[in-house]
Image 1: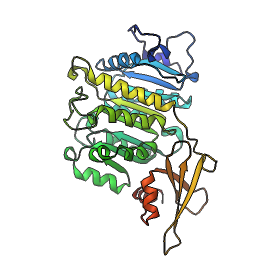
Image 2: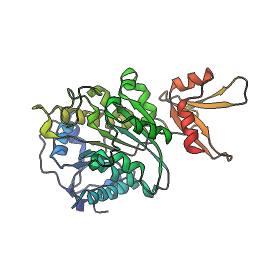
Image 3: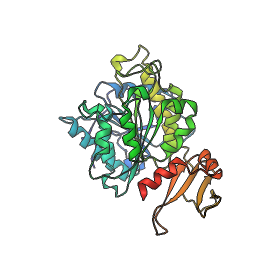
Image 4: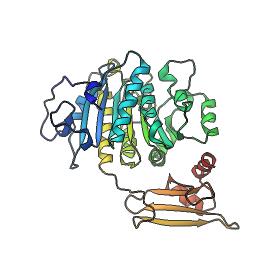
Length: 368
């Protein structure tokens, strides 16, 4: 694929110190550019000039000790309509993922994540999606950005195994929407639960192949640059923690950060700074990936839990490298009919007291 046909080259020159992250970024227009040698590729969606503002903040941040292989492809050339732009995003993401390069989309409205989602259609496997959003975009008669989730869930052919909705605010959504997700055995984690213990979000994000993040989920004092910004929401630090979880997830193959309106931001461009820092944490998380998923290796410890008075057992695995937990779900008669579902130590501890984890029950509902 000739990526240059899809992107507008960056016009801005960045005056950066030698230790800035931007100094380690490769650009599509470079003579020796080779996408196959990259790990991550930044894709700007610059409909309101937002991608350039986020990019400037990101490039100015300091790089770590990691050996970066990051590309900035520039800003995608929008199609004649939204559907055409989604089709371009799909084609680009599909190509990048075939090269084992993670697309990192910045800017634009969240409905463009449909193109990101459709890029998995040819992968010949079921995938899981995590969405961080204060709202639940299932309003059938609303504009496309407020109906994004409805379009994703109803997409045919259906290759969606699991959907997790994080950081919603109960008083902003119709309770029928949560009931609909529950009937599909999908999961949700409201803002209050994340504020109480953010580690509850990690297994849900670890389950996902793709992440889409609507910055309406961040409180207005930290990210005012969104028309739906609320006085309550995730803090900037919590948003960065969720981005870190996405980065260290070995399964995560694409991410997007959307819904920034620069005209609503403050003079210091605080929202752009928060989003840039979130992306920085995703990048650092990526370069700190450890787990292999080879559960029969010495890197994992196996735990078998018996249930008193029955022959039922549950099998858990703990990574000796990262202390993460998984549980084994058998859903067929063949030995190969099994899935390793991310979980928490609390799920294991509950099982030792005779309680089947809710995540295990929902996994059974989806897989059987």
